[in-house]
Image 1 (cartoon, rainbow, N blue to C red):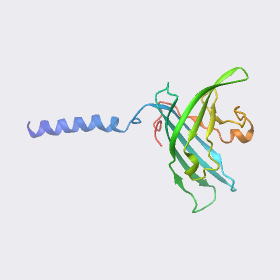
Image 2: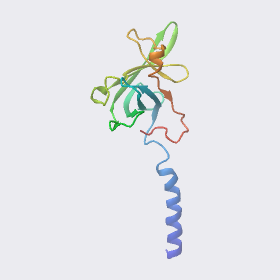
Image 3: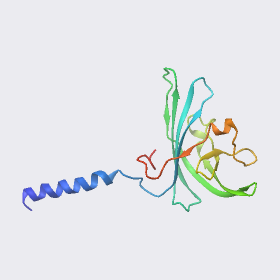
Image 4: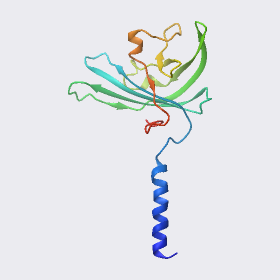
Length: 161
């Protein structure tokens, strides 16, 4: 192959690989959520990103999470953690309506594990809210402070943590 044609072929291959090489997650994604949850300290939040792996019809799989402390005042304690584990989903009926309950296993070794939610109820709009002790969605102001909202499937960050 002449040098000019080789350069054009390499350029074309690079142009094709470039935009598609990092355009999406590496496998099927059941869902992707994010939110900002309160920490017990003053002016502190926890940025949480949660990705559940598996096709949209899955009932279990692996999860990845990114947890980032955010102190509103200058604080050297800002930290990042990437907990992983498994998730399970099961349908639950609450007051005659069917919801999806999502349970996370493996958070006990994560940073701020005491504040991370392991049991969620997915609302009809896709938002995850904590499950109460009796298995209902916690729609109180305190529960809603820990909600995670769905990331749009077409967004750049979808499926990445």
